[in-house]
Length: 466
Image 1 (cartoon, helix red, strand yellow):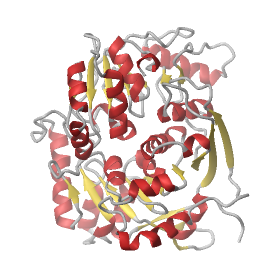
Image 2: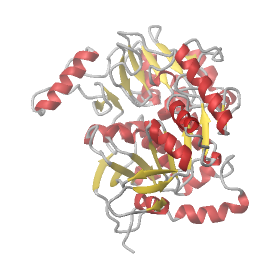
Image 3: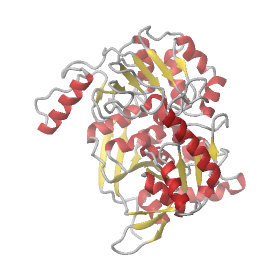
Image 4: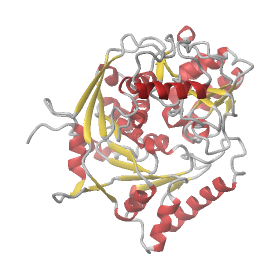
């Protein structure tokens, strides 16, 4: 058999039916469900009198539209209240397990899957959410799907799909002080553009990736979609296995060796091919921050906003539009740009390591009086762990708002919004026009950069605080 990469191996393992000239039938191992993209899918099952194919392959939680204030049980927005009620009803009617408020396991869908050990090497995982690519950190093929496809998977456990193109991204070198996984993925997106990986699944590899913790790899894979990729993954290794061992949904100890042998089979063969390859040198990378209205419009924090001369015409137009919207000037330094809001959380950077990093920067310091800082743990388990470690006290004493779990200010779909005309530095994944609230401005950065900027009231590197 010809040498295959890990993406091809996972795909081949899950092809249930293959007919020449037609999409292939791909078996799905795990279906993750939240309140925003599932209601219509369950309605279709109800109308057609269909059951969920295998409730053991599904799990639901509340995350996108819920409040993160302390009295979150009372949902003021009628649409959000209806979405939550519908998910609870559908989960009960169709027998889908749901992690609701107070279960100890509620949280952002892409946070709870890994922390509970549901996400495992070699699996296929889908959800009605584009950042499902997060789960690829475990060496699985995970991607977002539309609402109609959610219905297909619920009913059949399969999807009709054609094999993706494959892409290898090698991160060479090691991080400097103040530089993290978030900076690496922003550098990649800025280098290849928001369409640079269109139609591809990325395998991340290289010295820097092997040195990353699982939570750093989750951040890396989370933003694969922002350069156009269908998904992104990291081959499983000892770091992966150590993270999974003993988690609630991980294989029992009696099955552990058998599971390891299976998981280890998902590695790219020497000499295998990819449709595209990219190399990124991290040795000299400084913290990254976005200046525009897509994640590819990002620069190192010590650089100046790009100028128009020499840019392709189409890029000049996009740059002009982004600068006009964000009220910034080409050629101006990005460091020192005043901010009024800061956000730490989301499926990109709402895990315990992210909170620890921000707390390290904030400990014994105060955020600027002009800044409102929301700190939102990615799950009830993360929140509990942070409180056990005393991180909540660090945030509160610094002047931040310690919130309940949820997607929160990542997207303007709940109570947590940046007011119009205000500028936010955010550890989330998208800086689209109005993403965090109508008329708001968003700058993406790492948790460390977010915390340092909250202290100074302007965009700044965390290096001196570390």
